[in-house]
Length: 211
View (spheres, rainbow, N blue to C red):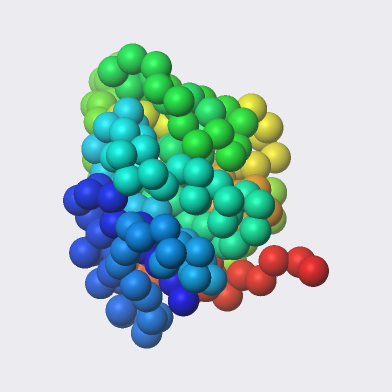
């Protein structure tokens, strides 16, 4: 059973629609017992890092998620802010503690100007190509540089470049996908990314952790 964690992030219905489109059975829930019964866990997310973390804490979910994902090694997918929460800290409107499953921090993107001296706007909103690296699991069976839909002002800076499985260029190179064993995250929104996004979700569902 796939559980989509419902902690009031705002985009869970569109994520559910994407899983319905690929014929996957799922449950929308924030109940710890449902997370314990899950085979895979998906954490959507929109909005600010600190507020998302506060909502998880108010529901008592960080400890349950850590037990199920880190200790029991259930496949996990974090989307947008859901990916950022994997970090140790986020620096949006102050400094906030994250789940800390992947070493690194989340900082505001600071793109350089383009070739004409025009600044890249922040937030970064729209379609951007993503380059796979480090043998990405989520980006298998796709074109060399598939495009995905982004809406964000902050990005994950991983301490270990080996966990960065996809990057995008937006006046500089930023992390688009992180993968650490059975823990996955995307800065973009696969649920809004049409064919490529649905293929990514299929790849997540097809992943089997090594014995």
